[in-house]
Length: 78
Image (cartoon, rainbow, N blue to C red; front, side):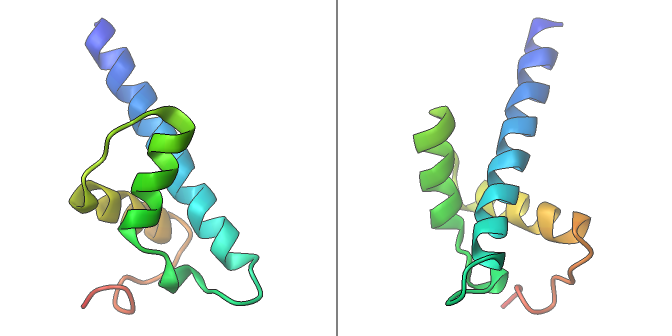
């Protein structure tokens, strides 16, 4: 049960971090949310929450937030 609670808290923190990184790019005059890289989320999550995250997982969280915002993934998938 404790592991489930910690997993949920970690997931919520990472979703919050991904949302923050994308929101910062959205409000920037020189960047767009499509320019955000998984490396930025990895760095922010470590700096803010001390969470280690792989680039693959970071991409999944960025994609999840983009979909939750109503964006399409076609422009972000290569």
